[in-house]
Length: 304
Image (cartoon, rainbow, N blue to C red; front, side, top):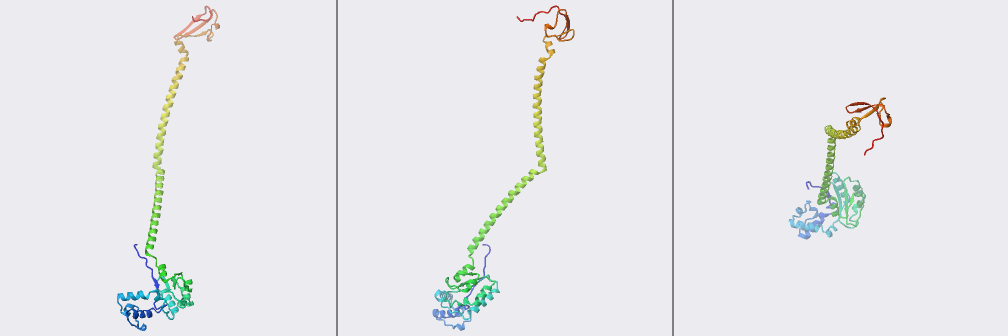
């Protein structure tokens, strides 16, 4: 984790709600035989007050915070006023959370947290307040006006201070989701730009002119092929028609030895019945004509 998450939390009951210093003077005498009257305690640092070694100080702290010893703490006179002063003091600082807490005890021991002045001070506090008074089964009026209730003071500390590992995991998950979303967005934008690029290339006038020119050249090639094919087909058809016409041409018949006959009036003669003896006829041949006179009209020629 690159940065640390720091939250300022205020938990205080030493000589605020209970006479803790008075109790530690008793413990110092019981554990180590050190007799320092309560009224002569001048330092908040108990190690310095009782002139304890590190081992002695640790032993006294453990003993002083045992549940059976905490329940024997005497409530500080004027605890309600002290709580209100503490709330107002820390309202003027930059703390993030105020925890009002006390260990378990009788209803009388917890009564300071039911005082109307304390309830009003908690309700009007602008800084978030966690009420952690007594045990889980204990309820006071401050529990109902605080921003949050905790069953015990230690639970209040857990609620106020988020576990660093959980915060790191949450930040890591947010970072992963953010990167994933960014990659998805970038991929979508990249695809969109690629489509725009293809559209621009397609709509580019130079490319359009090239495409039109290529299409025109293809059409020209197809047209030339079609013209050649049509010309070839028409040429073959013309040869066929010419051949047929040649076969039907009178000149062709004349070349084959046939003749064309007319009477004196210029009418074509195709039958022997059209002429009589002494009629004058003209026979047209390939290289000239013959005028003759009919001597005799005979019967139709039979092939033997």
